[in-house]
Image (cartoon, rainbow, N blue to C red; front, side, top):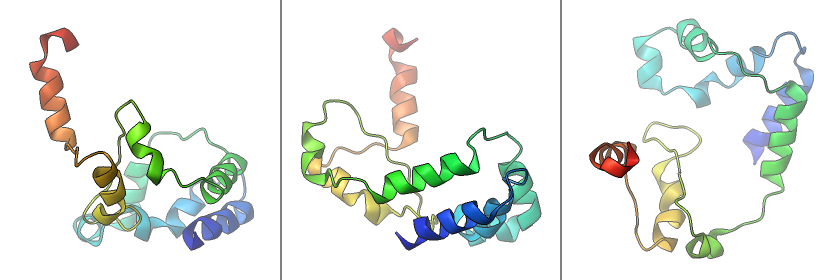
Length: 128
């Protein structure tokens, strides 16, 4: 929650014509130390921001407020009839593998890597 509050503070202080400034502030959460040791922080940020993000600073604050006021649905995960996609990384500072454990346990251990999902899609003639 503290990261979301920090985000809202940074977003509210950033000028609307410089939406890249919050990215610089939170670069330590966006990129792993291993990645930053292989490329410079400015290059990593340039690559990351090469595609325009149309979400305004007010929109980003609204996303943070939404995340802070969420309802805990972990007990209802088994009732969700569609696949759930969780993105996490072993070197991710915000979403680590341990954060996906409730999703896996509540879904009877169902888990696939993105590589397995893509392979299953490629091998399914009906998916083409």
